[in-house]
Length: 94
Image 1 (cartoon, one colour):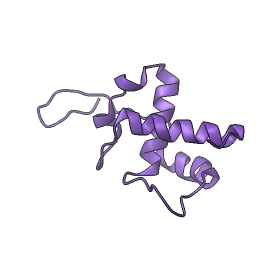
Image 2 (tube, rainbow, N blue to C red; image 1 turned 135 degrees about the vertical axis):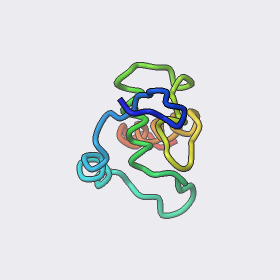
Image 3 (cartoon, rainbow, N blue to C red; image 1 turned 60 degrees about the vertical axis):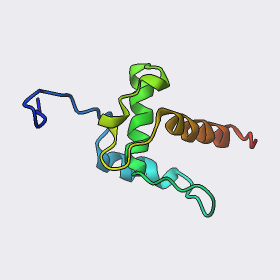
């Protein structure tokens, strides 16, 4: 198990490998042509959504500081991106 700077062990929160997400999932996502563009890595966004679905945690309990490396998104933003994807897949455009 890895350790942080204080020699305290911590878990890496990762559902799929980054390469797997990049090759298998990202090509199927739509890319924003205008409007909101996420400031964080899409691989980390997908990983956080998969982590939530795997663990069953509530959105507000997501360990966002451990899921993101550079720009940390709030749980509300992650839920919004997830909800937009679900709406897009179901055909509802609201």
